[in-house]
Image 1 (spheres, rainbow, N blue to C red):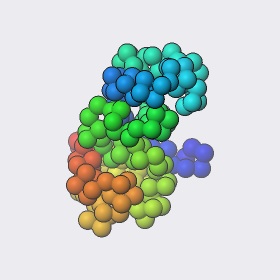
Image 2: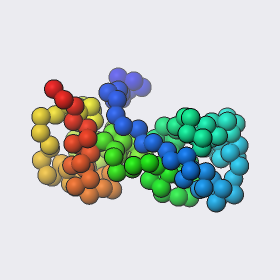
Image 3: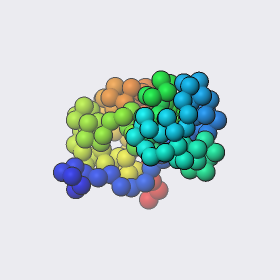
Length: 153
């Protein structure tokens, strides 16, 4: 437990930023790298420069902040946004594990197991539909994320 909540630490696919898409969106918004950094709460523009050169990548939560500041959909800043696992879908949605669990009416330990790929079969359709509603995704997208999440063994 971390800060009174179950920490999900099992890996997962972080959304990857597309350096060119980020640069284009930042320039279209009329912001310098330094201005974007300041608006998303990071020091200096060096990190934004690294993202735009592809030598570093922001975490998913930061991609959402960047998208909000640039007023673009977060997936438009990413490479292969359709390749996210279950955790990636949740993180991209801007919700914590606790929020998803509560809104989808599943326990936090169950969601954590799912995000870590520890499940023998897909959840019942009703659960997939609930997750889809919470994550603003189709049942098919949620099923695909589960498939990408599943760990061998």
